[in-house]
Image 1 (cartoon, rainbow, N blue to C red):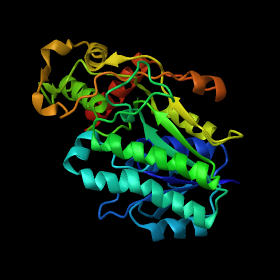
Image 2 (cartoon, rainbow, N blue to C red):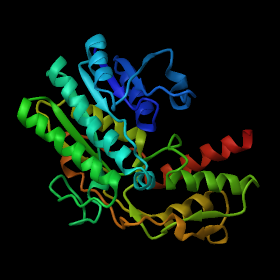
Image 3 (cartoon, rainbow, N blue to C red):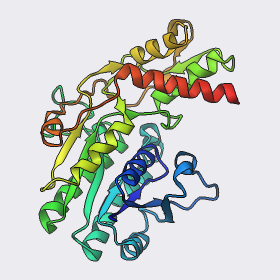
Length: 320
């Protein structure tokens, strides 16, 4: 039975990846930061099938100890301070976790067992002020937030360790991937939850920022399979993962509200408070390399994703 260690196990991607790896016969070790309030909501249904251990990307010793004790053959680094607006409020913390945390994990791998295969969760936010459309593995980075900058560091330090120490280290440059497990602070979940609240009579409006911002949105449950496939290749490499389609926040609103028989124009209020200091207007992937080399294709369409999220939030609000 192969062993996989996942940082960020309590997050959206961690929960879906854990499900996938369990189905494939892995022993899954999930790393969670210690907190006075336990937040296992996304993995509660998996607790009998995984081992959750305390660890922290800010603490080198805890990473060394985990690798030595559990001896994983694969490490998936999904942990990060990943909310872009927060990265403006806490830029140094974001850098320490999202950037330097990658170095600490790679150093732990180098010292304990350089044969461990390592996956780094890179991000389309690294492209930021895009230099070409669509964005591929060769597109230059131009990050527009402390989060994006930190992810660029994490990406390049992964490349450096791969080339310097012959570690099987890959970066998955994932475009926006959503699900009913997405945090409520992210715009897609904010919309689906807002629609549900309005539909169930708990709210009368939904305040959003830039409705014209465009993203390449896919289903997180599809994207974790691409992560796993990257670590099964003969040679380590970096891959862009996305749908190759772009949709605006406004289009997301249109589908979400119409799915429950409402017109978004009657409820959505644009609020400058939610605009970014430096906006990223258009992100769209060129996943040709991923589709060719990994034989990966997204299974859930944009409309299916939106309606899935709305249905889940409506059901949740109807129960409460």
